[in-house]
Each structure stands twice: as C-alpha cells, then as structure tokens.
Amino acid sequence: MNFVDNAFILICAALVMFMTPGLALFYGGLVRSKNVLATIMQSFIMLGLVSILWAVCGYSLSFGTDIGGLIGGLDFAFLQGVGMDNAGSPAANLPHLTFMIFQCMFAVITPALISGAFAERMKFAGFMVFSALWLLLVYTPMCHWVWGGGWMGEMGALDFAGGAVVHMSSGAAALCCCILIGKRKGHGSTPFIPHNLPMTILGAGILWFGWFGFNAGSALAADGAAANAFVTTHMATAAAALSWIAAEWLHGGKATTLGAASGAVAGLVAITPAAGFVTPMWAIVIGLGAGVICYGGIMIKNRFGYDDALDVVGIHGLGGTYGALATGVFATVGAKGVIAGNAEQLWIQFVSVIATWAFCFVMTFIIFKVVDATIGLRATDEEQDRGMDIAEHSETGYQW
Image (cartoon, rainbow, N blue to C red):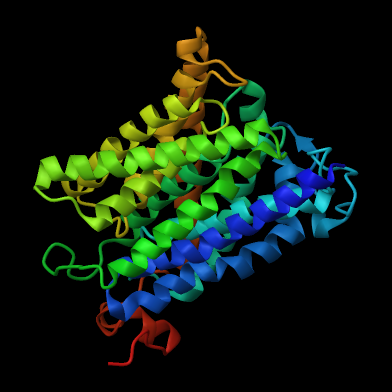
C-alpha cells in the first residue's frame, strides 16, 4: 500500500463527489425558475441513493469475482472484505476502501447526468425507483465490462475514466427516456429560457475543477500518468470551449456564455476515455473536434423533434462516442491507436460503442416501461404548469 497514492485518490474522490452538486447547479440554471429545486434535487439526492446502493451490492456487482464476463459476484456485498488494507483491492497500492469510495463517486454522478434529458416533467417517486434500477441493471454491468474484468476490457477496449461507463451509458439512457416520456407541455410553442445562466456557469466551473479528480484520479496513483491525464483534461476542455463558441459564432452570429460552458463540458466528456492514453497536443485536437461535433449534436434534436431538455444526448452521448473513437485514433501513451500504427484499436473502440449504446438503450427502455406502468413517471400538464418545485416538493426556489 502506498500512502501518497492513498492520499491522492482520497482527494480525487472528494473532487468527483463535488462534481454532482456542480452538475446540479449546471442543470438548475438551465431550467425555468419554477423547476429549479426539482432539477437540483434530481442530482443532489443521488449522493444519498446511489451511495447506499453501492455499499450494499453495487460495488460488488461491478468489481466482484467475474461471472462469465458479464457481472461481478456478491463477494463484496455489504462491503464485506472491503477494509483498510489492500486485501482484495483491484488496486494493490490502495486500501480497498479507498478504491471503493473513488468508484462510488463515478456511480453517483452517472444517473444524475440522465436527469437533464427529462428535466421539468418527471415525478420524483418514479425518478427514484428508475434511478435505483438503472444503477443496478445498467451501470454495474457496464462498469464490470470495462473496469471489473468483464468482456469489454478483456477485448482491449480503451476507456481511461468513463467514456462508455459514464457518458455513453447516460447518453443512451437519456435518448431513450426523452423519447418515451414525451415532450414538455408547450414544447415548440412556449419559450423555455434558462432562468439563471450565472448559476450554470458556476456549475460548469465546478465540473471542470472536479473533473481533474475524475480523470487524473483514474490513474490510481500519484504518478506521471496522473499528471498527463490532468493536463490532457485541461487542454481538451479549453480547446472545446473555444471551438464551440467559434461554431456558434459562425452559425448564429454571437458567442454565448452558455456556449462556452457547454463547450467546456463537451471537451471534458470527449477527453474522458482518452485522458491517460494521449499526449496534450492530441488532447487539443480532440477538444477542438468535441466543441464542433457536440454543437452540431444539439442541432440534431431539432431535426428529429425529441425533447432532450438539457442536451444530455448531444453532449454526453455524442461526446462520449466521439471521445471513444478518437481514443482509438490518437492513443500513443500506454496504448497504441491508428496514428501509432494499430488500426485494429479503432475497430475495438467501434465495437465497444455499438455494444454500449445497444445494451444501455434497450435496458433503459425496459426499466422505464416497468416503472411507468407501476408508479408513473410523467408529471401531468397541470403539475408542469404549476412547476415541479411546488408539485413535487412543496417548495419554491425564489421568493419574489
């Protein structure tokens, strides 16, 4: 066990935990004022719900003894055998508890990401049940496939910090949910204007800050790989913020603060699978592409007509997909992609993308239908008119 590595990863776990309140602010500022608390709550409460599920069985299903390459066993259920030393830890340099809690923070934010797709129109009770089932039936298998000894990792798919596990999975789920739940009342005829963009910018800044723990911490040691992941994360994010506002400037004639924030998040998403496998200069290239591609991604929803309220599909789904494929092209650090003479890696990445989207979309469809049929998920038109803050929580975000 390495005490320096332990301290570093504990700090990174705290940074990743901070991302979920940051996401709450990012999403909260983008909705109408009558829905701000309900939107924030859908992210914040995941710190409670997911953490408990993770301790009870989620961690074990993700990192327990491999069963057929598909799921982990229950040997770590209720955190049995997960102690203060490195016995049984997937990272021999870390106490098992440190590795567990670091991975817990990844699990927390992933279902919170999905909530942006159906913002302003999902009932809280249904949301809680949906999120719990989604974590256990979608996130834990994906985590095991990639990081826990499952088939995707064994195939050689590269996902340094969660391009497939976190972003593609939440993006596929978001697409399924916003199609199934339907559009917000008034969509297409009523302007849905973000009520507090300074809140959204603050949230984006917290996400950028916390993402250093997300990506650098995924090196699982305080070493050069962590330094590289830190730098590539920052450079890709900076480049994506610039390329997004350049794209919207050329397209719409103005560069917006929302565009800068969205571009930064797009860059963070795209570099996540690649952070430990590319150099800083290739990270800039990935970031430049992310800003333009994800800006185009949010334009696509207008053509297809689905109501992805806060652009989860366009940023996390498309950005994660692009980042996974870009990893197969630009990987030169610890792994080889196309530019390093290994064209096969791009094919492996492509297979992992297709498998992730297919599995997560289909499973989300099943979970959504079951929860909707038993508890109900969509708020009524009257509840949407009143606002989800009052309808679901009997609170208001602001006293005028």
